[in-house]
Image 1: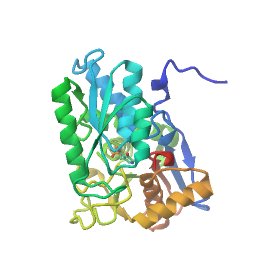
Image 2: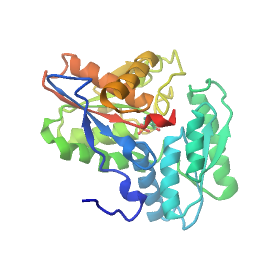
Image 3: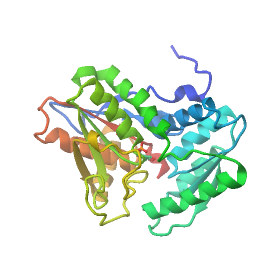
Length: 310
Ligand SMILES: Cc1ncc(COP(=O)(O)O)c(C=O)c1O
């Protein structure tokens, strides 16, 4: 029996957990939160909704006022969905290094897309310097057009979204049976928000941050390879809302591993997802197979976005 939601906003959050028992047969449970089922196609829908709701509630965003943000594509898609439903024009600035499929998706959702030339990376591989260039353009547009600047890296609603929805949803599904959480870090909203909530519920929760191999700044290493395939994560700088007390372990994933796991997820589990999702599953499997947790441990990770954007 279907349920009627009053708008697309009702499709954000409450995503299912899927067991990856073909990739991890036998003892222990490897589970993934299917964030790609949301209307913008990614985990960023949650942050987009929370940011816009909080800004409207605080009077920072008035009725019909435009919204602008720098995006690797996913936050833009989430904001486009939310802005369309709530009646705000949306402008996305994006590095040209992100996949063209992302710009097309944003345009299809009615967003105005402003592409910004890469200063460092190569197509498909976006670096911190590329992100800064796209951010500067977003700030200029906010000034020129009186738009609300989302500022996802510094906006506390981004972490709050996950602390108050994703984390509680995982806990509600598994409770005390859950042993570990594994997630890649872009703004850190997902990792920080979920880990903070889960550790509050169970102090022994093992939280693992996933980074691209060669850009392991959270693990305290120098950046050796700023460009990588894990779009939306691993920008080579510590995000401003990072909380170092939450990460019990760091796992680095190479481009080859992410590519291999993308295929595995599609072919074995029927899940066509993006590179950061594949990196998360690869890292979660490494954790399950290590001796860090008991043999029968339950580990949750995140399928951040659909593979159709690449
Ligand atoms: C594909 C993808 N994976 C992971 C993330 C990381 O999410 P967060 O910003 O919550 O750290 C993002 C963020 O944009 C993303 O686009």
